[in-house]
Image 1 (tube, helix red, strand yellow):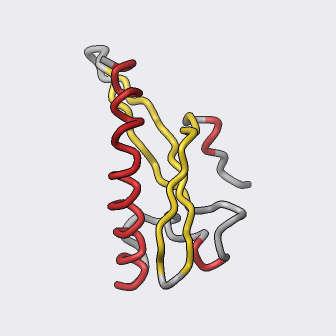
Image 2 (spheres, rainbow, N blue to C red):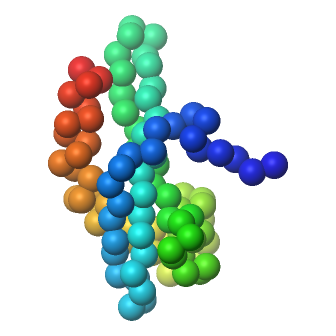
Length: 99
């Protein structure tokens, strides 16, 4: 059984491209909304490199947070750093819907 993030999260429209080991790696984001016991809403972003346009070796970068060896972790950190910068503007407008 394959896990389908679309059942639990909203796919955000923007994609980011980063260079890893000389290859373009596309990253998309999914947003999950956490509702606190007091009714507050917090958007949580999940990064996803499992995209058809990515090389097979890059599709698993976001499979397991902090998994694998140091090279795998560097790839994850590259994805998260660049995606965070690129997603900050769209997220700002999204987060206004949760306040």
